[in-house]
Length: 494
Image (tube, rainbow, N blue to C red):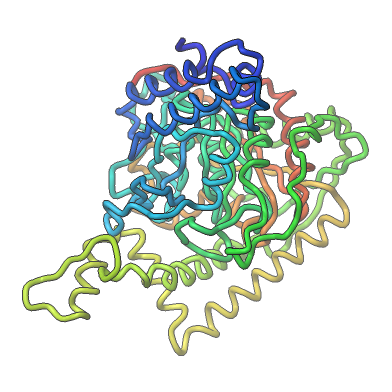
């Protein structure tokens, strides 16, 4: 039954409905793949019992002639940022080691209500802070990809949703959840040759999702193709009164609306994204993407986003500021790690717990965030960054007066080796140069694989859309997918 793991969400859903195979057969096949892939370190917790229970429910419902749920028979991976009732949730941090939530996040509950089963909790950068999945307290996730030139150096699967990207690319699950604060769905998707979409801010509830930067965090799906992302996003999205930023809107039927015909659409090419030192392969792929858009019937227009160069600096003020506030709750008192040196007082316990529980990157961002929020620096840094954010959002508004979607590269390079950028945080942060602007503006954006670099590693193209126009983004992504014909996959070495 190992061939069942080659199927995506739509194929599994349709096959279970048609009786071509049972949901339990599908669950068993993926459970076997997960058990054989320990070398990737993609899963922090395995929950085969959850996947089997959901599969059994699907098979029972079909045998009884009942209408199957939207995701009946589909097992998925759950990023460890989503709280799962009765299942350890750590955000890949020692400070939450052993924490078992007594409640379910809204996003995961929506997926279980739709019939999906959980194969396990996926590894990630600690508190979603990272671009390579090297900040996890429980070890690096390894990309299933390797360079075609024979170099076997382990590669980064991207971050922070590196466990999700690695698991989907390695056929450990047909799809997974991710979260995107500044590119943490799109960049890992590009690095591993899969598809991922960050919806409009507010489409998916943040309730029960461990917070990094509350005004930026947004959940989204990661899967092997555009259709599968549309199916999963329909199940994940929806209004939630417990999240004050949740949009009170009906969830569109994105799968039914899919079309790769872009006749009458205008695709904007932002001139500011042609950054200095961009590899020729990225430039060539971008031009290929432009040609594919034309072939799909779209008109190409050059647009300007003049404040793009300020996006990364603004992001790395706003996101750490919100993180320092959000992470203040981890104090060793109510849950998680407690480090209480002998004879220590309350303040000593706070300091010892946070020093022991948080990793270096998390500490770095807390320090930055606390500094920019401190008296005397708040106006100079945080207030200015918020003004820049407003200007970036206005740039996009003006651009969308001339076009329907934007096309850019997803990342400035293919996957790099683990450890290659770890010593230089600035070099690591530059991985988000193409994804951060749309996050600051709260726009829907997705990455679709477009081709391979000279070393046989995947490269992605990014589509950015108007607020609430996930359909336009998905359709443009489908147009690329149909023309790119990307079928490359990593060889099994694990």
